[in-house]
Amino acid sequence: MLPNYYQFYCPVKILSGQLAVSNIPYEMTLLHAKKAFIITDKGVVKAGLIDIVKSAFEDSTCEMGCIFDDVPQDSGSSVVNKAAMLFEKEKCDCLIAVGGGSALDTAKGVNILVSENAKNLLKFQGVEKITKDLKPLIAVPTTAGTGSEVTKIAVIYNEDTKEKMAFVSDRLYPKIAVIDSRMTMTMPPKITAATGMDALTHAIEAYICLQNNPIDDIYAKTAIDLIRRYLIRSTENGKDEEARLGMANAALFAGIAFSNSMVGMVHALAHALGGVFHVPHGIANAILLPWCLEYNISKEPKKIAELAAILGGSLEYLEHTDLAHITVSLVRNLLQRLNRISNIPMRLRDAGVTRDKLSVAARLAINDGALIYNPAEVSYDDALTIYEKAF
Ligand SMILES: NC(=O)c1ccc[n+]([C@@H]2O[C@H](COP(=O)([O-])OP(=O)(O)OC[C@H]3O[C@@H](n4cnc5c(N)ncnc54)[C@H](O)[C@@H]3O)[C@@H](O)[C@H]2O)c1
Ligand SMILES: [Fe+2]
Image: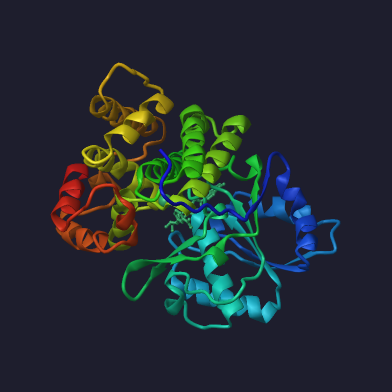
């Protein structure tokens, strides 16, 4: 059934395939840009991925102005400020983010500061607080997870409040997403598994959340289908090019879906675990996803049931609620297999979480904006119960 009203928007040009990175300088000329500010992290540099970007510039009149590789995991506002100052100093005119969600979101934060001519990110936090058009951002994801290359969202850690700040604006969409299988082939198995589970969480939450729409549903289902085919394969064998491209596209499709539908309680609870315990985003989502899906069955049995078929377990004669429980088991099985291959933790206690601060995380989680879109309401006690089940 169609909703009474919905919106869908994705203004990002997508380049996907072998050697897509080679087209970046040409795309820069189309954007009237000449000098790029590269934002990345040390792990990505060490994996040789910046060299791939550099080689694309060899015969070009466009240049890589400056390489900022100081992005930490779950990047924070101080890093964004530092990079923005360097961008101004080097007089760059566009940004190329090469990395996982941390590098991509840092680039979005830097873009806000340099385009708004501002010093402090705080006042742009929230929904549609950015007033100026941003500089062109070319996003080259090297993980297959966050989908930040096609989202209007940036998540940046606030070192003072120890919370993750969310920035949401149509102006935050990158101009171009470059999906090149060479860029994810070096990802270690555990990061492949964790970021892939982030993509699965985006697709599932986009599909079942209150703001979902029929266009997002198509993107979300396609993403889940690609993840079923390729997540185990790319975790088992990082050099499997077809699986890498499949997962990179899955993350992109899931990103388009949730950038419009938004996410739900898994992300609310995961953001809080990131803030309090620094659990990597994908790992927090992976552990929480089956528990939160189970929690949502009472409100959304039909949509959760529909996912069983895509995840590989179609048993159409079953009632929606029974089928929905099969969906939860399929997600749990996937996590167990990934745990065996990559050692991704299945329990919060194995991911650096301690019981004494779960109440602090639960309090943060119930104030997270993602909860607004969750099918079922979540109280402080509910959040704490989920954390304890997943502990
Ligand atoms: N903007 C959005 O729409 C959105 C959505 C979900 C999550 N996020 C944010 O994204 C961040 C997480 O991003 P992530 O999960 O992609 O991880 P990440 O960017 O933090 O990277 C994780 C690690 O993987 C390494 N790495 C990345 N690609 C590699 C490669 N190809 N080869 C070798 N090593 C590689 C990095 O060096 C880093 O050490 C969180 O801050 C999260 O809140 C943003
Ligand atoms: Fe996410």
